[in-house]
View 1: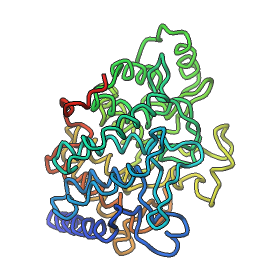
View 2: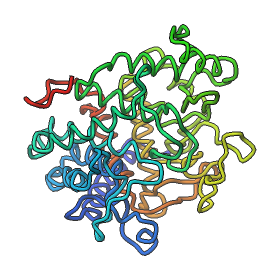
View 3: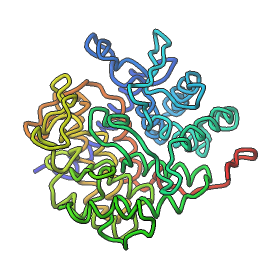
Length: 409
């Protein structure tokens, strides 16, 4: 069994290699999603992605490396320059072609992550005045999101395959998206934040709350109450007459980290994920129970590139980036020893095949898949290590008064 000294050496090496990878993947336009190679170029990974750049910015901001700290805001600036006239932040920007891509059905989470990262870098003094300078773009982004909000639930609505799990059938009200939305509302002092949180808990975890009075909400909850089997986790999405109970690990973790979930629900979620073994042998699998081809939720597009079969990609693959949020959630819940042990396992996942920093690994064979040299795998490790060492978690930092002229309420 490796000793504590061996573990410390592994963590130190993973930290150094993470910093090095992020520097190598950095361009004048921002951090690329993965290291450049012919396959990455064919699949569009040599671009600045909205969600990737934002998560990388959070990790770079706490890296302790001055070069990365200075570069943290670069990708956010590139995304802002290619923002749509209606306020939507692109899914990605093709650095060479200078072309912005907005996905098939509207990539809703890039805008959310962009706002979160921009506010955090401004708070940390690393945004070079971007938050105030980009105020018109921030206002546009917020207005675009508000246009997607249900007027009674105060939750964002979306179609299938339009967030980070971009070939998964989550639609309607989606857990992952609305956990981020609650955080954005708190950070930018947007109206009805507490109504958003109340609806979040009623719809995604109706098992622990009284049925809402609003009859349309009651109907959505009633379907889940009659049919759902796993009642410890938040539902991955809720639609008119169907819902997801595959156990979206990232969505559940973000529910905890953004404060959308209550303290008691947070304990239930972590205990349920531990019992499901999503962290074995590496943290963590993307879902507790994959959607099978025989399920009513299966969609033909999930077989695109033979990618989203059971135990693969978003449908049960092991994601080091998600593992970082798992480690942070453990640390935040007071499980310090377990958080450090999981951080060591996260470093081992990054180290597979000669420090591949994989995008994801097969959930059963553990074979590295996706693109190697994944930037947010490295940035996620830096962020998790920072929190385990006692640093501030960007998703938990107390809200603050916005700069003058930035009020939205």
